[in-house]
Length: 232
Image (cartoon, rainbow, N blue to C red; front, side, top):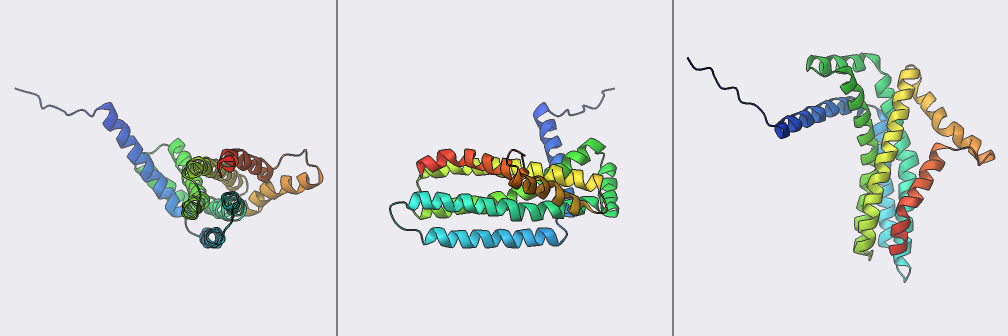
């Protein structure tokens, strides 16, 4: 009597299966995060930032056109960061604090065999990707518009990765703050998040030595875009 042969998956196929399951879990929590006024307002403002700066880039002329295009993209990233990013983070904090929906999503994830550590990781990743997309995609499209208006390819190849790194770092930081606010103050997560973002910034206006979230990321943006500025 022969025993049936049980096919064994290769390590690569096992890894790919875990990746697919992780992506499905992130998509599940991202679906819950998308509900609400904050995210809709963030999308609308992101489109407005892209359209206005794309129009400004398209009208740029002169010998210093490259530097002007670079400056427009940096200014657009600042607007996207502190309006679009903040609106998306506030929407994420509210979604994370909604207990019935959070319990329903967690129960569904538990039924699919995901441990609690995977839920927390997926929630953070969903919020991070949401902010990163809203900040990074319009900026990358502006780089494409800039190349169409005379920006050089070396400049674009320098600026595009910098935008991706910056948007990812900003998204992760805002996602962690949104999670912290939702866990610490489920009834008023957006108020707490606003205090965490604006409080140190307002103090830094009177005492510049005090670090603030906007100040830290403004410095990061300048450093990441420095190489592109030299190539513009």
